[in-house]
Image (tube, rainbow, N blue to C red; front, side):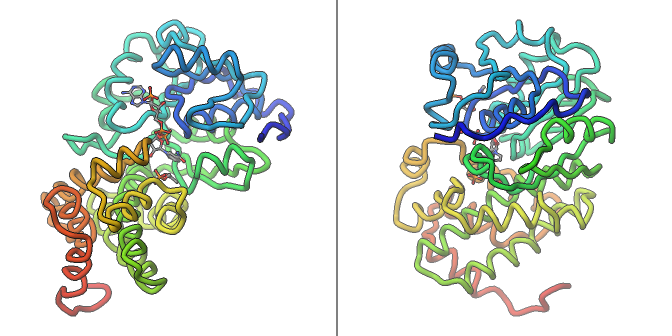
Length: 346
Ligand SMILES: NC(=O)C1=CN([C@@H]2O[C@H](COP(=O)(O)OP(=O)(O)OC[C@H]3O[C@@H](n4cnc5c(N)ncnc54)[C@H](OP(=O)(O)O)[C@@H]3O)[C@@H](O)[C@H]2O)C=CC1
Ligand SMILES: O=C(CO)COP(=O)(O)O
């Protein structure tokens, strides 16, 4: 049971009551992190039975078992009722639920209360970046921030040293959220590259499926390193076409998260690739994992957007073929290996 981690002295006077929307593994870990920093934290889940259980047991038995809630964490079932008390909102639902959650928040969110999210993905169907979705729902000019980087929820909850990036529309918004999350074992950097930070988190999930397929087929360390490196080249081409900053893509929310997710079986996206390589169907593999696997939806919209932008993304394209066009994982690798010979960078 991870309950002996210290509750720190009051973190920062700027850290006001924060509402975490979504009590999956990552929302719960972030709420615990904030509460350990003595930020008064509300944690909302859509399932009132889950909220009742969290109130009773002071942990999230389903998504983050055996991690005790600090005293300043309060599970809540009524989203709208929680909003007037809130001075900062952090949304941590999967990308497919992002717009609907924001639509519930809109109209109740007090003016000027920053909207942050730790969701990694693009809007399924439209391929919009989540800051675009937020601007559509809340109106242009709303203060926004995104938290991203190499972060497995269980490691953060266990207090293992971790570093992330917070990018925001205004530096004061980034600094404020960063100071609330920052602690002895959680280092938070700030950035103004909202686009690069979001695209790193969305595209790495697709590439992690590829790494899982490579390992699941029994290929070696060379293959994994090649997929990560050529995957980074794809991510950079794609994100630079959107106007992202190159350094962001080499940082925690780009290369850092790509390496983490491609190399460790805590990653659900990597595990999806492993399962596909073992012959499981997509629906079977997703059901077995039983949690958010953002790369499956991201593969569709990333490949469609790459075509629109005329950006080559051969690994993402092969993942799309495996997920949605019946291509066998081994055939996908063969298709990648048989591409024309060319300079590493053009
Ligand atoms: N887990 C991790 O280590 C990390 C995850 N992330 C990102 O965080 C996001 C959330 O992932 P994670 O917490 O892992 O996912 P989980 O699968 O652990 O949990 C998903 C949570 O979201 C809730 N949810 C799903 N759809 C909706 C909806 N439409 N409205 C409200 N709530 C909804 C689920 O509720 P219910 O139980 O009722 O279905 C559940 O509480 C993803 O974008 C992921 O990429 C980022 C960094 C690390
Ligand atoms: O985003 C994550 C780590 O940074 C979690 O990865 P998975 O969603 O693949 O589990």
